[in-house]
Length: 275
Image 1: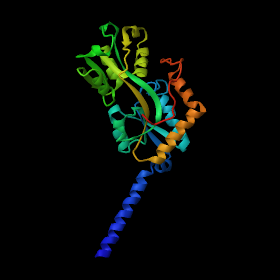
Image 2 (image 1 turned 90 degrees about the vertical axis):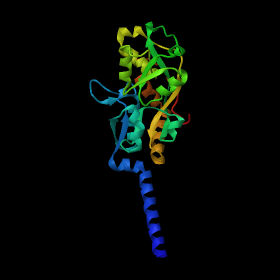
Image 3 (image 1 turned 135 degrees about the horizontal axis):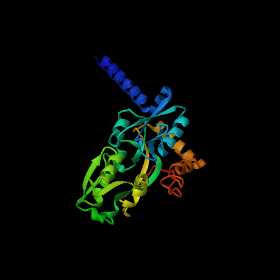
Image 4 (image 1 turned 60 degrees about the vertical axis):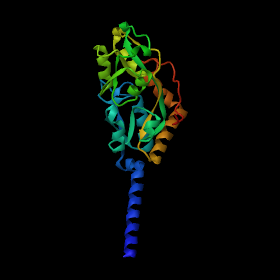
C-alpha cells in the first residue's frame, strides 16, 4: 500500500507539474494557434478606436500590438472590452494581451504583469467654461463624472474627498453627461480630454481643462501573471521600436502636430517597466 500510495502521489505531482508548465508557456500557445488576441477599448481615440471609414480598430496601442504580433510571427485579433472588464478578461484567458489604456500601478501588480511603459500622461478635470470652477479644490461637494473601472475615481477622491463621483461604462458616456449638465466636471487622462474637446469643434470654447494634475499615469500593456516568455517578447519588441526610432514615429502619427492632439514632441521613452 505504501508503494502504491507513493506511486500515486508521484504521478499526481508529475501531472500537476506538466499542467503548470503548459499553462506557463502562453507564448507557445499563441504561436501554435497563429493568433494573439489583444483586448482593446476601441473607444479611446487615439489609443484604440474604430476608424469611421474602414470600421477597423486603429490607434497608437493598436500599432504597438501589431508590431508585437509581427515579432511573434502571428496575426493580431482585436477584441473590444469594457474598462472594468480589462483585467478579468486577461486573467480568464479570453484575451492574450491588454492594449487598453491601462494604468500601471502597485495595486494591479498583484493581479497582472506589465510591459515597459508605453505612454505617460496625467489625469485632469474638464469643466464648462462658465461654471466658475477655476481649479480642482472647487469641486468640493460637487458631482464629477468618469468611466467605471479606471483609476480616475480613486484619484479624484484623493484630491477632493467630499466630491460625488458618478461612473459610466464608457468615457464617451461620461463626456456626454458633462455636456448635458449632469455633473460639474469630467475626469480623464489629459490626452483624452484634449481629444474630446477637439471633437466639439467651435463649441470647444465653452469648456476648459483645469490646470492641476490629479495624478501622473504610466500606461503599459497588460500581460497575464507568470508568463515570462511572452513578457520578454513584448518588452523586446517595444525596446526595439524605441531604439530604431519607430516608437517616436508611431507616437507622432497619433499624437503629433498633424493630429487633433497636436503634441509637438514625446516627453517619455519606452525603456522601463518600473513605476
